[in-house]
Structures are given as structure tokens and as C-alpha cells.
Length: 353
Image 1 (tube, rainbow, N blue to C red):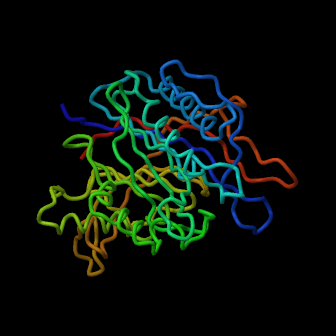
Image 2: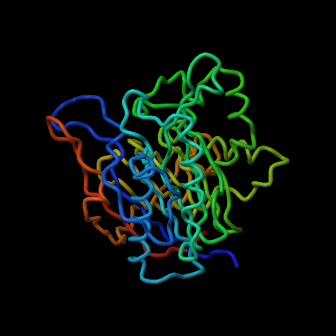
């Protein structure tokens, strides 16, 4: 049976910061912190315990386990949507622009793909933030930098559901903008990451009612998901003819919600989580309609249509995370850095449109 409801679980964790009282460039690539104890059935495949991504994934497993403990039971009709912010998987290594080398990417990806395969997460979709990495294999002259999001199904039969790439790098990415995957002029890179099959991964479905659009930070300001929806609506051979997705998920590091870039259908929702934001770091907003500049009603795929949004309902249960290992630590050295409260925000179930 299709899911009839969804439940948003936002993992609020800083993934970038700045020194208080100084107008300086934000710092992304925070320290990994201490190693959390393992969770018996959310197992991160073995790696050296000092490995940056291994520490971050063990913390992610612990946080998902805390979310499970605070749900108050499971409902098989409700899809739980867990979202972490952009840059969650990013090393504290300025020598590589805070990106993992290519040889670390396959084991990291494999660990993400396997770790949520437990019966307790059967009715979950996990968006674990983004992975920042670089590779010299595809670029002809220089490394290519990637900002990748893998979205995953939980459960014993779960694993990878799909992958998207951030189209363009922002200043927050801290990488050479011309070497980002979306702006590369390398012909092999352009061909691989502009093919329709890859671009379409931004729009996907779990079942007939649980349909999703996924976007990464700056792409939201550039209307990337909205344009993807418009392209698919206009393609007569494309099966995506059901309008906008039920849920528009935005994982970000410094990107406020823009009503003109929303792509969820009327009655659907935007789920935003931002690792570098003034409050609210996360929010849930219902779409009540679209309006064109002429004041006529619009559709989510109309270029100039602006969404009308209800305020966040303010109904999330806030679970403050405690314990040294489960927290991203403050940055050592002189000066104080902005480190907001790290917590889960668990919304009650809501009907899928």
C-alpha cells in the first residue's frame, strides 16, 4: 500500500561556521569530533577509527538511533524523512579544500549505502547531507570537485535510492568554482553529468503518493529543481506528468527558502535543513498555491510562478543532543566561533497530498 503520510525529522547540526564579531569568510569542514559508540543494527562498515568520514557516519548512526527512540512508535503508513544539512560529510583539511580524495569516496559511499539496512528503518528515507570530494581521474588538466548527495531507503531491503550533484559551487563550498562538476568545461565531465538520466534523479518517487524533489543549496537560488520539473513536464516521452512532487527537500549550507524557486505541488511541502543559517535552521512549509506576475494562478513548473507558503506549524518536538561524542566539537584556537544548539526536530505525521 502507498504511504499516506510523512513525518519530517530534521537533524540540526552546524556544517559551517564563522568567528564571532568578525566579518570573515565562513569556515566549512568542521572537526570530526570523537567516535560514537556503535549502534548494533545501524552498522557503519569498518574503517580505521581515525578516518574522518567514519567518525561522522558513526555520529549519524547514533543520531538516527536517538530519533528512533523519540518517535513514539512506528506507523507503516507513514514515511519518515530524515534530512541532514549540506556539507555534513566534509573533512577538516584545508589542504584539499576540505574535500575527500577520490580513493576515499567509494568506501564512504559503500558505508552509506549499507548502514541503514535494518528492519527498524523500513519506512524511512534518509538524506544524509552532502559529500565533498575531488578526483583527478575525469578532469583533463585539474581536479574536479564534487558536492554529492546520496538519498537512501532504510530497511533490510533498502540501500541506495539515487544520487544528485550540486550544479554550481558557491563561495561556501570553498573550492575553485571553475572546477566544480556543474561548471567544468572538461568534455567528459560535461557529458557524464548533463545526461538526462542523471539530471532526472532530482525528481524521484518512493511510491504513487510519496514523490520527491531534491535540491542542494545554491541550486535553489538558481531554480535548478524547478527547471528540472519544467523540462520533464515538457518532454512527451517522460513519465513524470503528475505535476510537482509532494515534498521538496532542500539540504543547504547558507540558503534561505525562496518562494519563487519552490517546486512542490499545491498541498505539498518544502522540507529545508541548513547547516549555516540564522534561525530557523530547519523548517517545514506547506504550499497553498502559485501565483504568476499577472496575479493569475500558476503551476510549480512555471518559470515566474511564486509559491504561497504557510508558516512553519511550530509543532516539531525538539530533542537537544547531549554527550561529547554525539556533538560536532567547537573549533580550537583563538577566538570564539558560532556553534548553534545541535538537536533533532521531529514533526508529527502529516498527510501526503
